Length: 214
Image 1 (cartoon, rainbow, N blue to C red):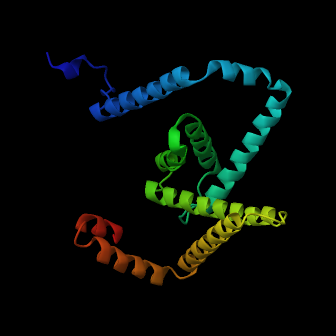
Image 2: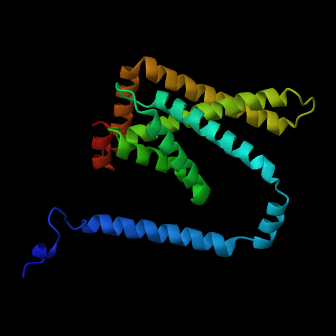
Image 3: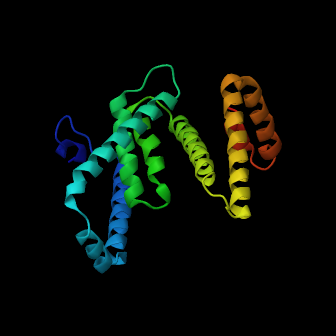
């Protein structure tokens, strides 16, 4: 008897690739949870947890929710495309990114955000990831400005700290200027990127060079 006849009408077996991806994700999640359970200093954790005031928990939840709403709205503005993206999808992807940062190393939740949004909206993963990079650049620039304001309060700051702050500030100002030029003058920046890609990768990695100018 044909095995297809044993299946219920209207239902198809899940593809093998989806099963493999599901099993791999389940294995990675289980490995992370096991590592956290056995690698955590439970004595210190319980001691710190006892010092926590539960009355602050609703305030913390509200602040986290407000942060997610603001970040989702800002991300919605930075996303490319002519059609606006639904705020609910941006918010859900932002929450998934927060959760990924909590349980995954190296802030891998920042990759979960664009990946989830690309599954719900007709936005390529690379375009959504580019918006995350732009978002992080503006975050870093804001932190540099706040760092400069804080350093103004120190009369005798170490010279190394002042020099490092200046270097970081100048670097982000240059990067911000390049981003603004790329926004208002996309043609010259795109042609420069194509020439640089051809010069750097045309001989060593022609496939990569072809994809970068596609």
